[in-house]
Length: 131
Length: 370
Image (cartoon, rainbow over all chains, first blue to last red; front, side, top):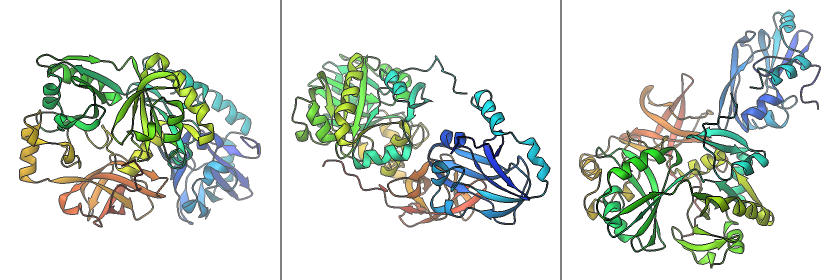
């Protein structure tokens, strides 16, 4: 799998979104999981909760750090990855697959235009995002 | 954010860490490796095989002369008169008010010759404190800069260090040391550590520390040896409830409430902090440092409030995921009434009380050589 798959859209806070019609699957990027180190806890909203683009919707914790999660898009939480309760390390092992966080039923799909493409995200990492 | 900071101090192994691809972070004024491959993997390598830690940032002071014993009896809380040549003692420096200046290990090198190992972030403060209390015929030297320190910890530590050294390593008892050559370099092999596993701390001349480090990792391949960063050092010590200065103990905490009363020996005579700790012993302790595990799924962190029926009654001093116990664990100060094993408490995590309970410590069974 590519480090930053081309079919995804990215935030400056290092989340990705895979938009499929009216829904988007959401996770954190390879860069984010690598910077965090071993993920040991993920706190996610409940199905039905409202999320707003670039507002926090949860928390991911590694051994050393606590980091807020920012919603790439607005809408209502349709699915939550329950597997992460017992296996938070999936976020490290497979950030774009089994380490997904939530699925959002989108309220404004056009917001996706504000997100970065893979190429833009990689460019961003080389400058500001990469510190 | 992670621009190289030239103000940070470097240990003799800094270049070796960079070559190994370690992630470097500032720690107590030093540029130190927090992890090489991953904190959990490194933690497991120490519990299951053997890990090598660069702890050269720690400080060493030597005391020599006919009044060395008298000076150390006055400065430290433990009874130095019981310390034999070749033996190590865990101890504390206290203020007059009973707060902790630092925790330390004390080595008796010869009749009138001792070495004190102190925390890296406290070297300057401790050296100033020690210097102020020198009295009589004692020569004290801060040898931190010229001393390298490697910890070799884990069930395979004995065979690895044994193969590289000239002395009978298995014969070294817990909290004892021998002078020896290790990988051709003369130093001190001390059977001590901060992980709860059997293991050693190797005191070496700074200029030759890298030689020993490289040999340990190369020779240790067949023992499963891995370099271990500060991240795993912290989770390993947390599972043992070993206090970390600056987190669990500091100038505002006293040794008794921290569970370190076993190294405070008022019977030996006067020392700095004796009157204050004796007064506390007489009046009873208001709070205690306890270990707890989370009942609800949440990670307790340093500084989070500890609640009793939604009122803040204490504070978490250290907390994380414990890889060997596979639980979210922590240590913190609670009122004496809540200190008993089994006491239900809560930890405030992001504004919400999350259930926890006081448990027996250490969290993970120690396997040090007794």
